Image (tube, rainbow, N blue to C red; front, side, top):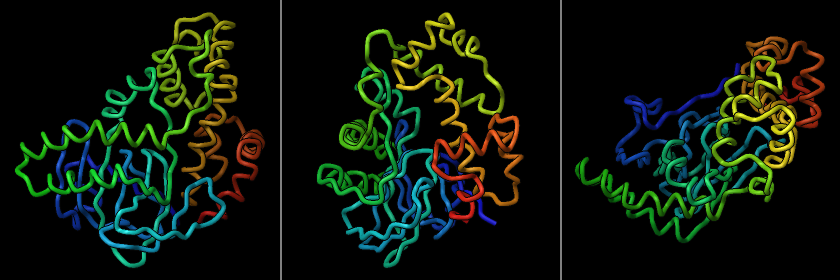
Length: 292
């Protein structure tokens, strides 16, 4: 049996609290020193975007859900893993089992980063190795906050946090092209509303007219504006989001593929398999076998 370990660095009691040694928090940014990986070889999902730096050099076996096999990399004492929020990864380390982690909450990212990128937060992808002199030079600042009293530590984290986050997104975010900002597309606020609405309704049929109503547009205008902004139709985007959710659910082999298909809004196994293969190039069954 395989499932996903979810870690919330904001929780009062972390999943890895038995080995958490220090933590400092600011306004949406968390710094902690703890044991890592929490469960070597298991899939792990973080609720906050995190940079993970080992306490000393390690050899890491790393895999994302989209990767066909493990990747083996070496991390020096100054390199990081980049793990975006809600993107499961599987990690094992040889050489060390402790890390310094800088985690950014979704709320912090939305309020601090979106205004710097025309109102829309650019996308980060998981990366096994990030070697960045600017980010690495900021780590001693964060490490020092772990030795400070809570109030002072919070102020220090806030002071360094915005610059750290901006560097991270400026250097390592990827976009879906310039279509986001083309004339005739959805504005940043409408993009946020419709993507949040779609993610909250993956388990049911959503008519195009209902999506259009969410952003206050007519059906035809909405379809055109959505395609301009995202480079795909609303239903293509919906299918892609359903498949992303299904990938996580497939890691739990206690669940049948039929049940998963229904949970992500497909009416039957055949339709689910057809869409899944079109998006990923493989079937749900093969995807599961390759990762469990």
